[in-house]
Image: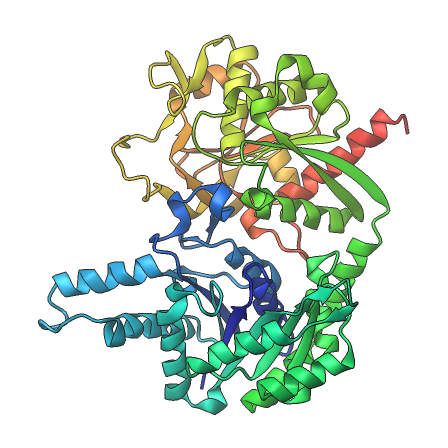
Length: 538
């Protein structure tokens, strides 16, 4: 029977429940289990697709095209399993589903209530991920913190699941803060005690308590929390702040985290095989080189807005044994006067995805600078479109070229809606989502990086390369190196004779893993390292 693990958080938000859940997933997978992960988010948005990056960070996209919370990126990177539409559920989605069922008469005229209708919808969702993936273990993170009114239906639903599947098949892991008071130089357990008490008041008794802390914990803290929170002493696990988040599974396993989980769930398993993961961590620690990458975007004030891109850059750094220093550059502040000062010390420029016209001119300046200085350039989604517009304006004889997204009246829309698209479509239904195939042109940077001719990558966009300009731009030297299998959609463009000047309409960052860096990011960092070497005269 499938085992269910529920991860909750207390005291404050941002404790790292997602990293704890992801680390546990990696540890259980390393013991031979098939693991599925999901997150239940208490906000009322149907999904994060229309939420501001400043509020919520990036929108992560799964293979099946589901727009999800960024924590799912952590799950995929740690566990290395493709997630799906059953991996993220919001309060908004729950009520959306329930109200649609009510309108269709599926409740046979019953009064629709939080219990049982809302909680049943949540339970059905949790059970579904196990069924759809044939998982041995389902790890479910409940967003928010204990005591939040928004989280109560989710907590009640998982309490009921634990009752239905039995204590032997369910486990509650509670992540809580243990603050360190500098004045008295001691940790305080009281916030954890209150958080656990609040959870117990909802009928949930945590089996394992994970203590988030910045400093090593004293033995007395473990004893006190074990005693007053009614858990075994070895069920109190330290989760200390680390310089590299990928060290978390190794740290947690030193506290026998997965061993205790297996014991509490009554399952036998061999010790985790963490050799590959440990090797990756060691590579990250032993970086011999340094490379500076300018990430030019409009949401750089919140680094989580580009979380997967930043992590994919670091993964490529691990591969090359190089420390990737990301310079966060606000595209709105880029002007011709400050280009050399801002971009002159870089070894590569990356322009990530985004929507809307704000900051576009700064991105175009950065793309032009990279092209003219032969600086390695990587454009992702919007960054690919920027590369096309820049080339059309300054190298192909279309000085007023633009995207239909930024100037609907532009005479040369080199980027525009796909055929049949309309601007009337709801913002919450981005047209092209999830995995699509791409055929690679031989002899290109794409072919060199991937080592093949057919790939599949994830998308999230509404605008495309305008085929009306394909011939004109190609004649001026822009290489179309990747297309949809039917040849209708341009997927990648690049400049010949460069180590790396490439734009991809898809989002390769979503498929990068710490122990298996994405081919394009590996190629980009390799080019940046070569550029730096040449710049230094080696």
